Length: 123
Image 1 (cartoon, rainbow, N blue to C red):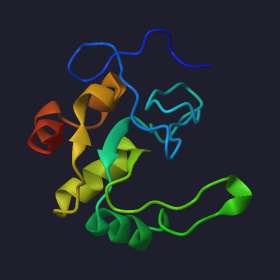
Image 2: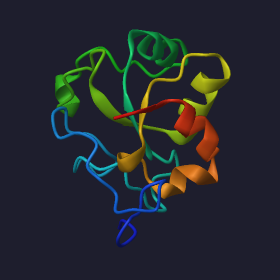
Image 3: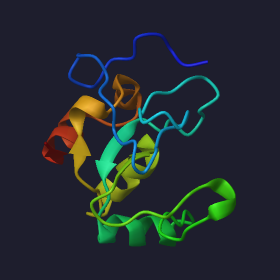
């Protein structure tokens, strides 16, 4: 069960990340989390070709459609909730995608410094 009234990293109400493609641990469009979400899918990003290649090299292919999971695959420009730790790994090697701060859950700050997210902020 998700936490009640999730907040974004700026302290306001959490905004939706994407409904097309439908994202989030709960597949409700929000990057909210709960105890069962051990990977912390809390960072809303606009994926880039660089990040998709980084993610694939790390073992998480986000580009290939997987109809059995009702997943069409991501393209550059799509918004998606990514794991906070994966975003931080990408940040460390210069592959971090832009972040939508208003749609990034405050729980991401348990893993990623706010300053790093702000450096990659997009509208």
